[in-house]
Image 1 (cartoon, rainbow, N blue to C red):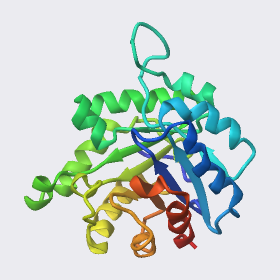
Image 2 (image 1 turned 45 degrees about the horizontal axis):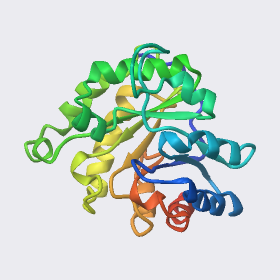
Image 3 (image 1 turned 120 degrees about the horizontal axis):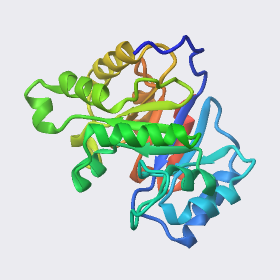
Image 4 (image 1 turned 30 degrees about the horizontal axis):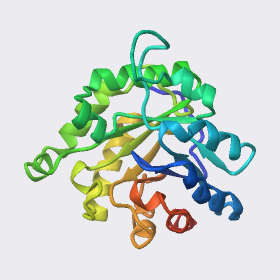
Length: 247
């Protein structure tokens, strides 16, 4: 993969993944984000469940908060009951779509080739893919981390990807929702390896138990261009505090 030379991003992307959380009343948290001043040096992206994407996108229209989605099917349309295409999500107002999250890989048996097809669909729909990679605790303990990440990138990243259309998120599986966070040295090692493989211009996010208390330390690691935030993104105050650490 030899992407074209692209100017490095000058601001951090702070993306919130609400996962399977959020009802109509949750718009109150979005309103708090919209009412707050745009954080210096950070771009805010909120990925609520699919049921809220359209209403959130309408409410956040022309604001400093962008709305994304958490997954998509690789087909544009067809007989796929219960699935949502990237085109449907773009039509609903999504600017970004997460693909390959470890919970999708584990809960739904998604393979690297499936993730690649989804990333291709996101590009087809004119959205930006946030493609997740990460190792299990067993793989970390056995020294396989960089090999696992390399295989995931090889199998999941479309060959024609460009920095404008793809973000990579490193999320160690053992740190997601557990409260455990890798050391900054561990994060730096993986992000350096991803940066070396992807080339200049691709944004690299760190995700996995990111919270206000550790955001500044994680965002200071070389090649960390932002964060993919889970539980802490459900509360506007915590999410804004993480975004504030980007400054």
